[in-house]
Each structure stands twice: as structure tokens, then as C-alpha cells.
Length: 185
Image (cartoon, rainbow, N blue to C red; front, side, top):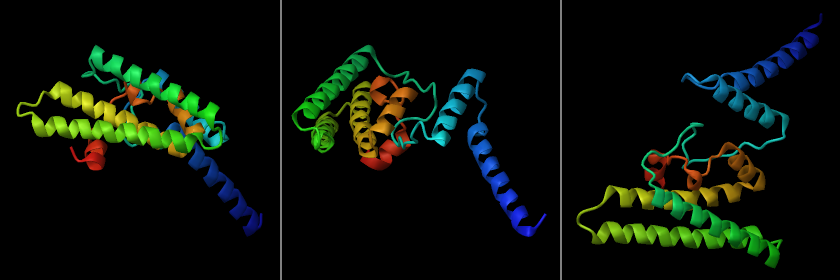
């Protein structure tokens, strides 16, 4: 075997090892069998190109990261916000298909700015701050910001996030460190 063949074999072996490590090595924490299979299937789909990897800075990465502090009224408000976002998106696709993403981003950023203004106004005007109300504002702001982030990454990222059930409006927990870094409160 020549040195060229040896280098080629080594490169192929290293590529296989990188793919294997990406699929099988899920992190430091213990993961159940079902969660492991789900994550391995998702990672195989990313490698094969049938699914797109996406960044989700404000959502917690854990598969079972449900927000225990989310009240039924928050869940209802978030479902309504998500429904309104979907209706707006469908309207914009019908009106102007080519620029629908740009128009949708403008509308969602406007909703995000309104939610931020409401939260800051609440924090400035109330002396006794209710933690449940602050949590409600955090979730709403994070949901809109996550929607902006996923739309900017493209429709494949949105589809993958839906498959992963990664939307904050669907009950996923908010990554508080990332939220504080981005929004400051």
C-alpha cells in the first residue's frame, strides 16, 4: 500500500469517525433510550441532508424541556399569538409570495418591539413586581424573537423546529441566560 492510499483510507476513516461521533455522542448527560433514538435519527437526517440544522438560541435544547411555570392562561395566549402569526404568514404569502418572508419579519419584529415596550413599561411602573407576570412577558418576547430567528434561517429550519417541538409558543422552556444576554432583563 502506497502512502497516497494510506492517506486516503485515513481520511475516509476520520470522516466516518466524525459522523459516528456526531450521531452517537449526544453529550455528557444520560439520555433515555427513546430520547437517544429520536436524537440519533434527527442527527442522521442532518448528515444525509434530508433535514437542516438550525440555531435556537432562546429555546432550551433538552427534548423534554417543558416550562413548569407556564400557566394555562399563558398557554392560551401563546396559542393565540402563534395562530395569529400563522394567519399573518398565510395572508402575506397570498398577497405577495416573493416578499412574504420580508414582510412577515417586519410584522413580527413590530410585535416583538411592542412586547418589549409592554414589559419595560410594566417593570418601570409597578413597584411590586409579580414574577408570574414577568414570566409571561419573558415567554412572549422569547417566542417572537425565536420566530424571527427561525424565519431568518429559512423554511427548512422552521420545519425542523416544528419536528423537534422546539417552539417556545408550544411550551418549550426559555434559555434564561441567552434571554438576559439578548434583552438585558
